[in-house]
Image (cartoon, rainbow, N blue to C red; front, side, top):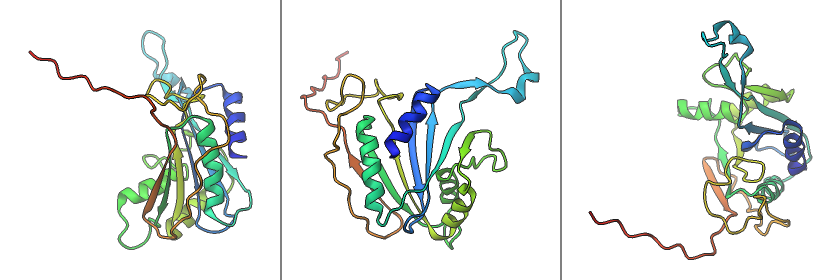
Length: 218
């Protein structure tokens, strides 16, 4: 399901993806917040009055897409499986899953608060400005506020197919279009239930022998 939704959005916007993230609460069947971060720019309509003398307007980053998904799930491994399938077929080198504590608990740092807000689509530098986001997620703010108390789980990958990273490195598991054929051979890993932990699923591989070049002598 998650893969299909991502592909539908890519087809609709026809823009390259920079990153895909997903966040939810550590409670069964909590809504999932899918964030699609696009590469591209558009003319910032609010700043047309500040155009330069040559007539060119200011460009702003293309807003990210926020989509609320409500599939039933009993275990985080079920969400892992869907994200693994999406990351595998979209050619990501890896998939990271993080289990974070609430950022409003005693001892939480300012950085943790920023990361919690970002995981749920906020712009921490401008909390009251949603121009960075095109959202179809009615419970986004409520999810963010509950996460600040109870903690949250976040997944992140950077796609190669329909993405920016085609030339970023070598990966011998990719098809010419930057994707991979199903099924994903990597199995979901059971969660520990502990906050403050993370796990990285390795998806890409290099089969060739890479010879390092000796330093040039001067």
